[in-house]
Image 1 (cartoon, rainbow, N blue to C red):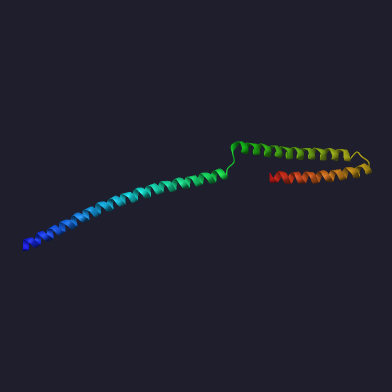
Image 2 (cartoon, one colour):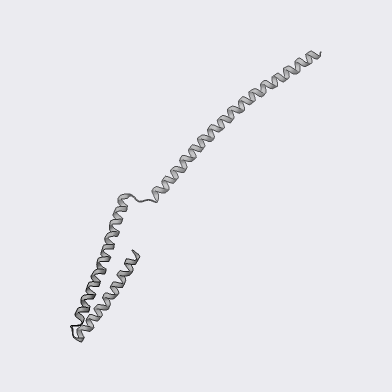
Length: 131
């Protein structure tokens, strides 16, 4: 009887062992499947992140041609302001040299023009400092 009992226990243990092996294989398959899905999700998330970065970069950037156009306009405006500043300086120097040779009435008119040019020069100086 004891041998029957041992055989029965052995058979039960063998069945449990076989069931555990099947469960273990199933768990390994599921584990591998989860790892593959995680890997795929990581790749997809990484691609989504790169897409978002690209879209942000595109929305915040300017094309090279547009940048060059803006730079040319800015340089032209800066040259104009600089040229105007030089012109105002030359006119002031000419007014100062003429001022000493004129009579009083004409001198007051020239003083008024002189003050207007000084104001213009100060405005241009401020613009140069900003640029």
